Each structure stands twice: as structure tokens, then as C-alpha cells.
Amino acid sequence: MNKLIVVSGPSGSGKTSLMRHIMKNEVVSFTTRKPRQGEVDGLDYKFINLKKFEELKEQGKLIEQVEYSGNYYGIDQEEFENKMGIGDAFVIVDYHGMQQIKKFYPNCVTLFLYTHYDKAYKQMIQRGDTLDKVEQRLSTYQQEMENRKEYDYVIKNNQNMFDVTKQIIEKIIKSEEGVK
Image (cartoon, rainbow, N blue to C red; front, side):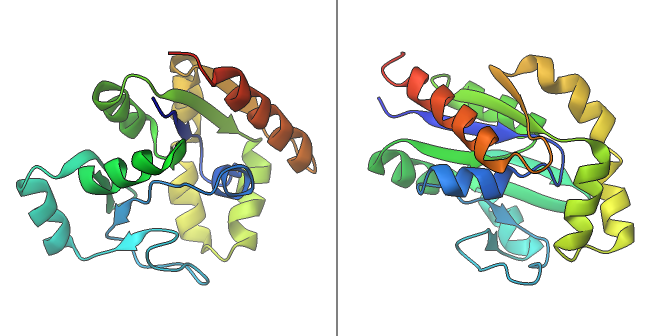
């Protein structure tokens, strides 16, 4: 059975950058938010309007769905099954998304990745988020940190330690291979 690595953590903690260096098979979420500069439809997210999102929801096609910062995110069953059919995969979701996926696919491995609040703040500004958006997204930082005890693994992404953090995650994934 293929492994699904479910990654969560506060905004700006390096989840996407790290996981894309480690694995290529990403389960891509739908979102109603507008793309950030440099984001590619179908690669970073599948950008859709609210009407389309509600249709997917009404048709029972979403295995995971959340509202975050006034936008909706979700994963449809077809995307999930396609990616899991290829091999081990990863998905990036929030705490509520992790809980939903774990119910749907109990064989998953959950990772919580975080960095210091100040570093997350700086990362988000550097990637082009507005000050308002950064503060809105980081308003959940403390709550997300409290939820970390619900994960299989908790990893701190220290400043300027990308390669070390990457190696730690790779070792965790390797250690989970063959575990049912």
C-alpha cells in the first residue's frame, strides 16, 4: 500500500519548498483564492471559483475541505486516487484537513512542520504576501502550534537549516516505508 505523507504547519514554515525537494508526487488541492505571483494552476493549486467549489462539495467529491483566511480549499477523490495510484505521495493541508484525510486514509503519516513566528513572518513577506495577509494568516500560529501534539512527527525548520530539515524528513519517510 502506498504511503501518503500529510504535512501541516503554520504559514511560512517551508512546507511546500521542503516537500517538493523530497517528493514529486503531490496531491494538489483546489482553492478559491487568487494565485500568488509565480504560482501555476494545476501545480501549486487548482484555482477555481466558489461556484465550482460548491458544486464539487454538493456532488460529494471532496475527501477534505476547509475554509482558511476567507478562502476554501479541498481535495477531490479523483485527484487523491490518481496520485496514490502512482506511488507514495504527499499533501499539504491544515490541522482540520489532516483530521479529515486521516479518517479517509488511516494509513497516512502526519508531519507537523514549523519555524519561529518571526521567520515565518519574514518568509511570507519575501514571497510577496501583503502585510495584512501575513498578519491574517499568522493569527492562527499559536493555535496551530497547540495542535502539533496530534501529529506522528513534529519537525522544526530552523533558519538556514533547509538541508538538515530536508534530511530529517527524508529519514522519517524512509523509516515509514513498509510500515502498515
